[in-house]
Amino acid sequence: GNVVHELLAEVEWADTAAVGEWARRGLAAEAVSEALACLRAPSLAGVWVRTARAEVWRERAFEVVLDGAWVAGVFDRVVVQRDVRNAVRAVTVFDFKTDRVGDSSGIEEALRRHSAQLNLYRRAAAVCAGVDVEFVTGEIVLTRLQKRLSVPPA
Image (cartoon, rainbow, N blue to C red; front, side, top):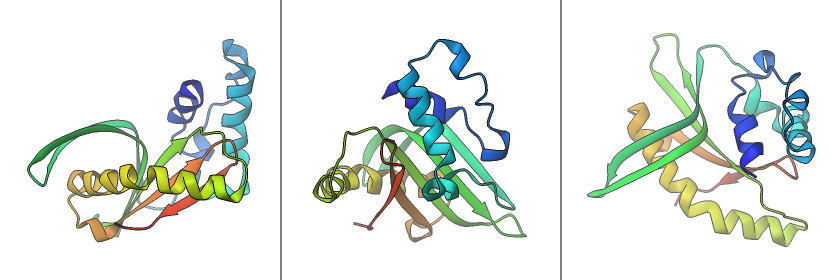
């Protein structure tokens, strides 16, 4: 799981991904294969495609105060969309999960298990980006299945 996260953290955008040397680095073949599958999956294209006036945060540490409590963590991937005046118009927090998930009940369980964390990360990303949390969406990326799960706001 950690190697998959490390490889995906190297990817800024699909058109700049230097994945050709991944296989030559002596990394676990299964991890390289899983990371490559995520980059090539049509279902995950929106995670990696550069759009106009977008910026990406990869493996970005954060420390914020939410409801009077200090919260620290690391975003796997956050895409910040800006308008022509450079104001933030949307933020998407992507959290990569390497869980072994098989059937639809396993997918529902993964969504249930990780939703609280993603909603906390949504709130932290809102603070970091300087926007209301309503501008921030959260998605779990199940790397083994190349599937995106939208996390409903809490």
